[in-house]
Amino acid sequence: MADSPGSINVEATTRTDVTSSSAQVYEVPVFFAAADPHELENLDRMVRAATGRITRGVSPHAMAAAWFDWTSHLMRAPGRQIELAQRAYTNFARLSRYATKSMLGETPRAPFAPSANDHRFGAEDWRKQPYDLIAQSHLALAVC
Image (cartoon, rainbow, N blue to C red; front, side, top):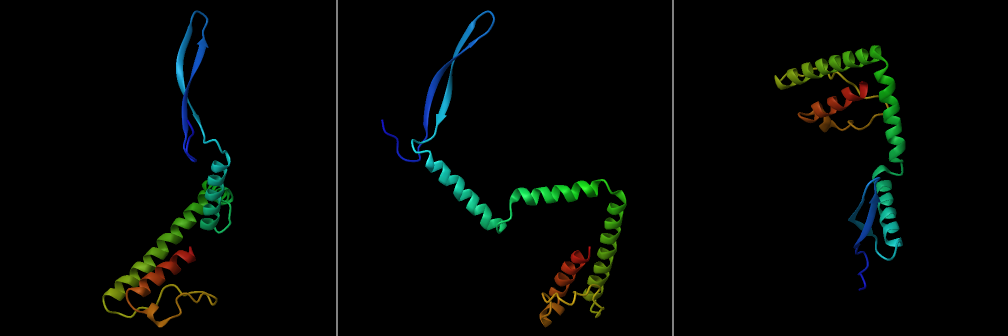
């Protein structure tokens, strides 16, 4: 019986395990791919192409290795961990103070300023509620 392209054949094979005193016979299903092995190769290519589009050509293995390298170094540096935690707490406090004053109707000075080359928040609309809080949140994370 001919299989259609892309179908999977399932056949059973008999396997014999011989132990020291007796032999056991049982059936084990064996999966065979379609007759054309290149169909599965095309699937691999499509997955690699999709991964390349998502990661913009950067290897996921390289990204994972860089992330692991950074975290493993940070795990061995408790002083740096404390420094980052203090900086995050300070930035959160500054952002919270700004948000509270903004919601009370005051016009507080923005706690975080973009760098000279950062033009993401240059439009005047970024200085209005609620967008100013979004912009300041992004800038607070960039400072860390």
